[in-house]
Image 1 (cartoon, one colour):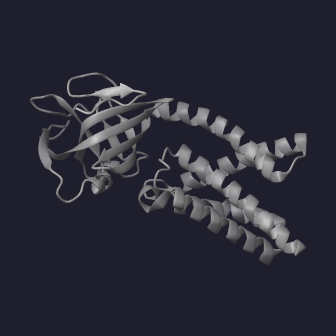
Image 2 (cartoon, helix red, strand yellow; image 1 turned 135 degrees about the vertical axis):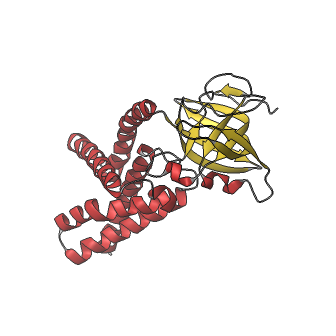
Image 3 (cartoon, one colour; image 1 turned 135 degrees about the horizontal axis):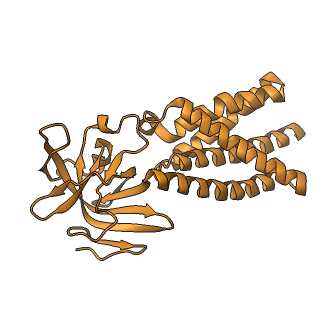
Length: 276
């Protein structure tokens, strides 16, 4: 009974720790958590069970610790972010992020424990709060400098999430109304349904004769910007080839007019706007 009790505590603490690490990794990659919570929890549970089995079979804490950090956690992170997002992220980058987050979280928890000598579970929770503050400041500055934003699209009550690049070079507009057109990968259009209406918008890019892109109207688009959010209604998004987003951390390109009040853009910062 005593052994079973400690086994339960070990599983609980490793599960909490793995959840924190996976949340931070997903946050640093700027991948929305919406739709990935179940995968994240399942990945954390699987990683905790694997770590427990490793410790029981090996009987060596050092072997368990290094195997967990070098193998189990990166694989759990790959499972948590999913196949589609995982294809865009090199495994070495994911591995480095897992190492960074694990060392950061573990260092903070160890430091707190040396000062307060409280229950390890409590220290893990305090470590989560401090790590979150540190990573939030780091990620916001990093992603802001890279002009990456979290975006949610709404169509007929269905939602799709994306990591979007703000590109001042995207000047595509529907003529003659001069309505800005954003560009997204095919996965974003899974929510539009088979009967959705598409229309062609011609474009011309540098170095070629141009062509046309299939465009669909979405009911709403929310762009997370700092501590606020930008809500746009009746937004046009063009469906681009997935090859455009290969090996990139984003799967959508925002129009240069997204943060302005130009013609064709209805937006409110930090509050819901009325539908047209």
